[in-house]
Length: 164
Image (cartoon, rainbow, N blue to C red; front, top):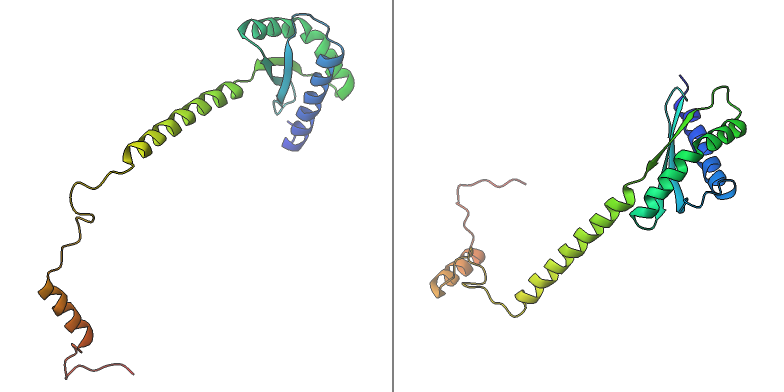
């Protein structure tokens, strides 16, 4: 087993190598507009997983997946040559689903924002059905006089002791 820092450095190096190989060496016409988003490697440094996204429709994604499967040997040999490690890890390509999740979340946020705007439009000019504050009892004139007397007068008992 290797330490996590070495595995992370190797994963970063594999990420750069794969992106460079896809850009410069792989000339497959099925390969679409691809972006390598991440690379991860197992702690024993035997298996590398490379995540990618493809700009385009489902056909472009499928064609790119086929092209990557056919170019895996070339990419793995280049990873082994450039890393110089004793055992070259196997390379597996996985389509990154994060952009799809981002699209779904953006749609949900847009719908929530539209619903909030509709609530605000319907609330314009609306008045409460009852009192403005139904939890506060209305004060009558006598209650107001009693309150003013309580605030002005001293309610302490003559026998009470006050602290210094």
